[in-house]
Image 1 (spheres, rainbow, N blue to C red):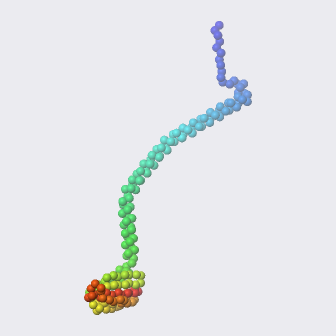
Image 2 (image 1 turned 90 degrees about the horizontal axis):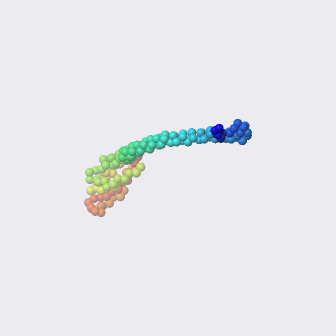
Image 3 (image 1 turned 90 degrees about the vertical axis):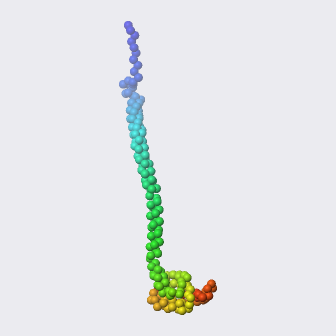
Length: 179
């Protein structure tokens, strides 16, 4: 008679599963199987999300490069714009002080033909005029013209002397108090 083959069964028998050790092993095998499956799902989702994150990072880098190029292209315009704003501010500040330009206009309009102004210094409420004249009559006419104007509160003739370089000229100094 042919020899009978022996079958070896590696799976636990029902008696083994009924024991405490068998139940613990069965529970551990089932639990660890779920843990392994859940871990594999987490790893796969992290691996797949990496492609999405890489694409998003690449898009952000491209956007950053485009915006950087736009900013550098606009830098010349920005410099010109700021320069223009600075000049407009200077002009605005200078145009606020129209009283000074009005005072200068009045002083130059009241100057006789033989009087030359060397310097005019303007402060908030006063002005100082230095000039030269060919005659004392020209200086007297200039002072009387300034006193006749209602824009000035007080006109005082200061120092009068002969010019050091040209004895034909008379140097004078007038202090004006503005209203």
